[in-house]
Length: 213
Image (tube, rainbow, N blue to C red; front, side, top):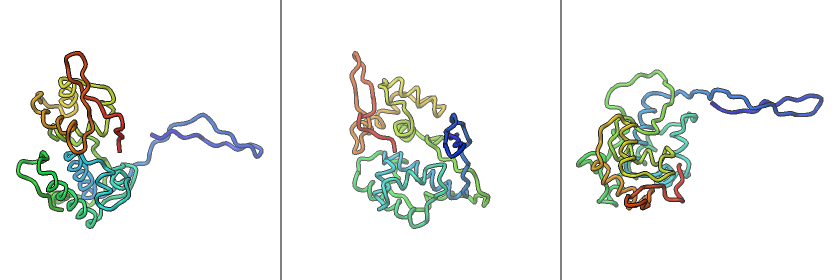
């Protein structure tokens, strides 16, 4: 919903009424376009790439990817842009050989990874972009929570982080599942969290300069 003021004019004077809530208009795109948007988001989040970083990496303005991921924007990716995204991601992987791969042994993507493997409908659907990709593993879930929620605006212990990720994905992960993802978030090339000692426990919180794209 969007909060708007109604403008009232009376005898050449303009007044603003109390704000009223109006429903945001739904945007509809083709399923194949929606699949590509969510696929790009899933991959960039796995590799902890911000929307602005990926945008600049393919030679676009810093808000380009964020605009495509905006549910209120009708935009979608062209084949040319998807090819540029794949080239950038593959280059990023090759330049960072210690990255945790999304799938074991998968160190290279093709444009077909951004398209559905089965035939989809030609009828438009509501543009629903997954802020936290459902069914994802610990790395994508953690990185998505860092980017898309306020959870890490306050510090949390490892136990609390695991509980939140389990709640979001309805999983039964354990602390060891987040050893590598948290290390990447704290020490990786695009680190977003810092460790704060509270008592005898390490807690994790957003780096103060961190901004959500």
